[in-house]
Length: 282
Image (cartoon, rainbow, N blue to C red; front, side, top):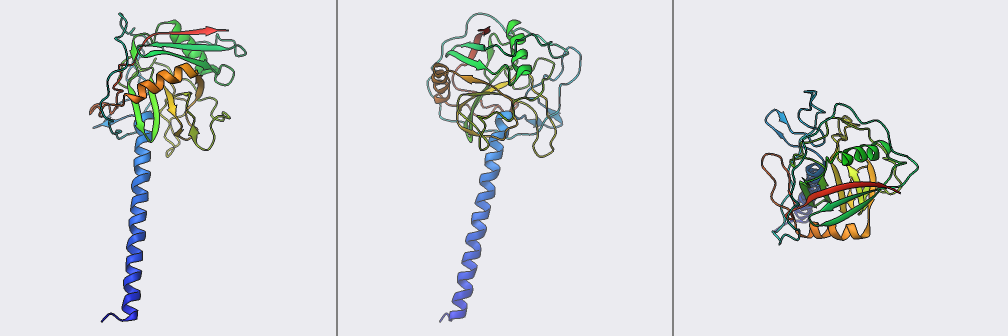
């Protein structure tokens, strides 16, 4: 027969086990969220070789752009029909520069970047006054045809919800050969550690734990198709139009592929290619 004291000890043990299980589950959930965030905005380290998210491995000046952090990969979603058309004829230009372009934009003017993709047009209202270095860089790159015929190489369908583009290599390792500073990290739209749907922001190599990797933006950027929990470490420099959001959500609805074992990218199932990018001033 179980005494009252024995019953108390048994209940105490059961309570302790439940607490341990809850702590373990919380830690697992936290690790999963961190890994998802990293899989979109970070890089993968294979052996001793770092693969860069925003910079090129070697530019024309034969120097690596920046170092980076390790990232696990996100899970794939079910395969869906490709909602996009075939890419336009043409090839990606192999371009690289040693330093950030000189400032040529009018910070007080309004600029719009149009991404004419295989899935439809995505118009982005650029924040020239709040992120002048970033907008000036894209004005320069787009003028050189840098984004034309490039693939959007990564879609994250869990934890955070973004499509990542801007790498001519289509691997997550490419960049223009120069870096630009972080800007507009106190934008009023970034509330409660969330990047709202419709935000366009820069990928970079910042590591919040080591506090290293600031000012490492290149040409890679991400488009947020659903509110995403992220710290305010990534330059928000544009807002997607309502029509552009419909295109972006169509891309997201097609899901993502399994992670590439070499790069860690979870490529979109949709064939997302920027046929032509333009920046206009109004």
